[in-house]
Amino acid sequence: FNQLTTIEPELFRFVNLKALYLHGNCIKALATTEKLRKLPKLMSLTMNGNPIEASRIYRVYVIGALPNLRSLDHSTITADEAEVATAWFKAHLDRAKKREEERSFAALEED
Image (cartoon, rainbow, N blue to C red):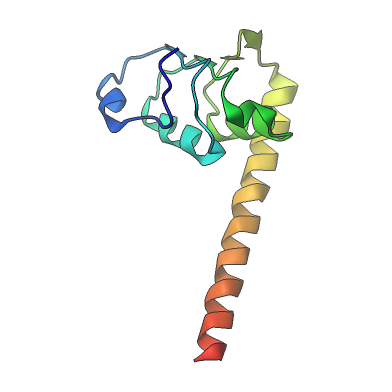
């Protein structure tokens, strides 16, 4: 395939993009998928065959990060699945923010 390792900013000028096929590449970071929020009309995405697919949280992460998706890897996203993923992703962001605050606080204490 294309051996893409990230999602390039040039892609975001296609604001009316509804389907994006990125399967079979070399994308390793789940957070990379969050960039796709800049494509407000994106409804269908394929990412299977990328290293991120091996993560046990892959599907819930991508669906939570991209709430407008209706299909991921050629599989329809149900309303229940979207609801669970949205809640999980919000909690994930809250946990990440708390960890960052704790790191900042610990760094201040060391000084």
